[in-house]
Image (cartoon, rainbow, N blue to C red; front, side, top):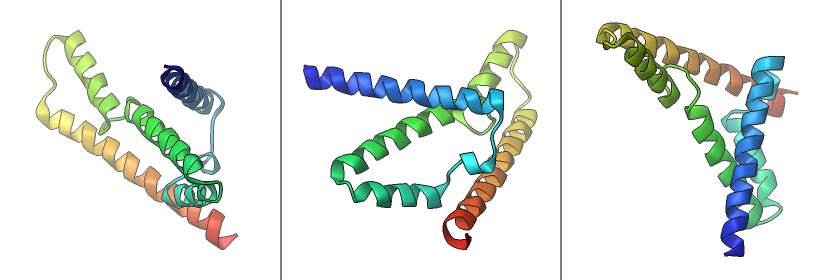
Length: 130
């Protein structure tokens, strides 16, 4: 029972920490240097591996929770974006035109792809070129 309680407490701490950081990023601004992509995740995993399997598992938990929270952001193409569109449809009391919804989702997907490319390029510069 104590282990289960500890697990919930740690998970809640991670969730609130991630939400706090995201809040600061949107209210105080951020740069690409504040973000990490696949190259940074590899670097963090390699570093955690030096400390043992528990560190790697903890990092995997943090990354999983982070992914879940980011997926809920109201960006088209993510679940949070779909939720936002559903709320808009509920307020309007009629569905969005599927073509318009497709365009909105495509724009969101394009934004995410550009962000992914920029973050990955920034990671490559950070870890390999400097």
